[in-house]
Amino acid sequence: MLCEIMPSPIAHSVSGYILGKVVPLEHRKVSRHKTFYWQIYAVFVAIFADFDFIPQFITGERYHRGLTHSLSFTLGFSAIVALILSYLWKSSYKQIFLRTFIFYISHLCLDFFSEGRGIKLFLPFIDSFFRSPVIIFPGVHYSMGLWSYSHIVTITFELAYSVLLFFVVWFWQKNRSKKINNI
Ligand SMILES: [Zn+2]
Image 1 (cartoon, rainbow, N blue to C red):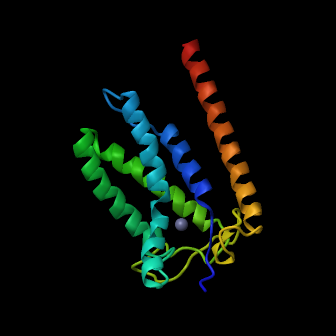
Image 2 (image 1 turned 135 degrees about the vertical axis):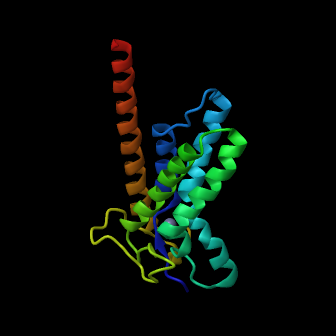
């Protein structure tokens, strides 16, 4: 059985959602509709790297935390997706590229600082796992099954991280609107 350890999707999704709010889509006409899709997009990009579980599940090969967790894939993904979206949304390529890169790299940062074997950050140039010597996030031990009590610690930690993140952004937005009102 594969012994997989990784953060749960909670921390990745919340980080994407918050980043989507911090770096919104700037456009002449940003409708409510578009803002909603932008938030969904930010969450999707922030969790995308872990879709490497699908080929791993199908083939049994260990793909997880490989190519989709590398800097070169992050750049390639951001470049291609920005090309498509800037055309569809009639927005600036540079803006979408930079924002997509930020959403995606948030995933790599969280995995880099979490328990487990690390990520293959420099594929295809260096085929090794890299991990921070300082661990911030405890990982979910997926090999222990979906309903193991061991997940409680990770989930509690990630929920606390999410609440903290929401609080920081709420505080930042409140201060910013106060400053704008004072001008
Ligand atoms: Zn990951």
